[in-house]
Length: 395
Figure 1 (cartoon, rainbow, N blue to C red):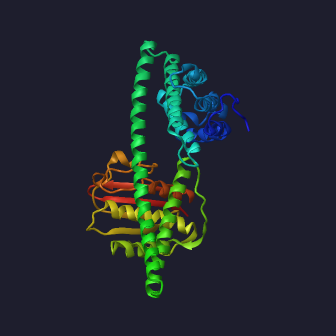
Figure 2 (cartoon, rainbow, N blue to C red):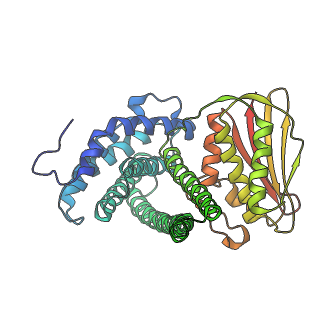
Figure 3 (cartoon, helix red, strand yellow):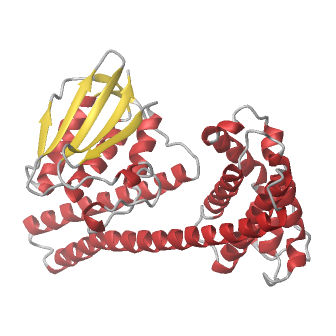
């Protein structure tokens, strides 16, 4: 395992970053090829460019006990960033927006890697943000200079200011989303734990009342299962966010039965809100529990955000090439501007003016489960037709 020089080693996260450089860059290259058409034909070495040195510089920055005003600390960071911007400028199909997007992607991957075992200290997080923002600005201005933008000096200043403003807004929104997310998770986790505690207390008070003991024991089991699902959702969504794939257990089962069973289970909680349409028997190899989780997420979303006096329609259709599960609700539509980012981690739409709390990870899981079956998830929403989510699976 490569080690930082002993004199500068102050942080386990700096060492973690060094140890994971190759893994991070491999994931970075994979993601860039998936999201940027300009990168699809480029080889690994070209895409990596000087980012190996850039990540190394960040590891040193967070490992040194130094002030962010010490620019000597950022020398390697600046050099690697400028080299990246200069090299990208020589690729005709690359744009300034794509250079900026690369740094944002790298930031997301770094945080996902370092947060695997929980959150890390704020001071080190701030150093990483500062280093990446500085690198982004340096790369962007070098890109602009190499492309021969008119009045390069002015272009550099404008680019730096615009980037700083853009990043400040981005980080402010991200911080707000994180705070809302963790507040909601804490609130939701407290509910089953409170029920478990109160049920256990009732058993202690009335240990000889067998019907009462069975009643409260079942409550405990039910809410432990509920907590387990919440924790599994968190872990799976985190894996998806960091670029991983869900581990699905596919067995022979009937998709129609899964849908009917899910509707019956949720009807016990929410009442007779669900109306099933065209639920044929469709046997195949599926991850039964995974698809049930995906369907539950869509149906609970429909309860939260749909019109309370209208039924929620669930259907299953089959063609020669694919299966399509549909969950439809009436009510206020999802704004068009939100639909593209609806399946992102932390995202919550402004449906019903944001009056309903949600973790912002449910739809990320739905997407991950669908893609684990080589399928996809889509949404259509309008004032006249309501909102329909589609899980589309190939046959």
